[in-house]
Amino acid sequence: MLPAEMDRGFFIVLEGIDGSGKTTQAARLAAWLRDLGREVVETREPTDGPWGRRYRAWARGELEASAAEVLGFFVADRREHVETRVAPALERGDVVVCDRYVASTRAYQAADGVDRALIERHLDSPDLPQPDLTLWLRLPVERAIERMGSSATERYERAGFLARVDAEYARMGLDPIDARGDPDSIQAELRRRVGEQLPLA
Ligand code: TYD
Image 1 (cartoon, rainbow, N blue to C red):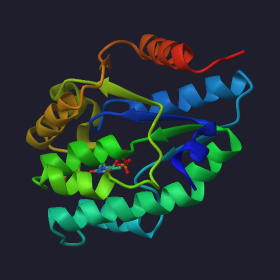
Image 2 (cartoon, rainbow, N blue to C red; image 1 turned 90 degrees about the vertical axis):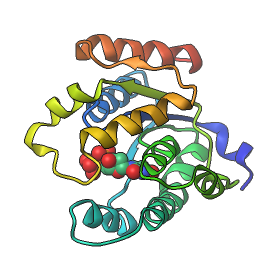
Image 3 (cartoon, rainbow, N blue to C red; image 1 turned 45 degrees about the horizontal axis):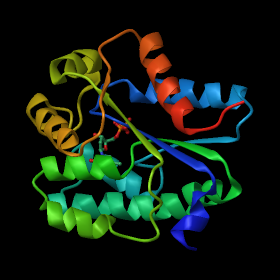
């Protein structure tokens, strides 16, 4: 399938460090788009498939793997996710709202010390549709850690690491959405940005 053929729908991605609130915002955005009559596929990476489960086992400390191997988990998970869910939805003309995608790999795996050129080689595939819109919810690391509280138990959920992830997101030239405000204003800003690009009834 050519990338142009996968492009009939609209592909929205939410990004941000752990604790930035994107999961709740993604769900509200999807509900709003449905109310406006759009077919919406709400999804996330890592998935609950075999590669996503392998990542989670590593994140909980149940499995040892190098940073390059963890990159491999995300790449394999994404290949399967795109093939089974994202590409078919875009082909049908649906809106896809995805919690994390390629920018997470660029940010987290670079923060974990993987060579940026190696990451790019893995992401350079005609089979990976480009997001139409990447919404980066930016929250200061201390606030994110505070929000996660005692649920922050995974390997990546540490202040020093998340500060590096934030710096990697900042390199990408995305226009940040200030995630410090109240959830309703953040949601309003997300809707405004989507409305600028997606014709809505
Ligand atoms: P998260 O959205 O926090 O899900 P969960 O509720 O399962 O913790 O994502 C899991 C982690 O995976 C998060 O710390 C970011 C990381 N991640 C990467 O390091 N690279 C990637 O390519 C993706 C998609 C996620």
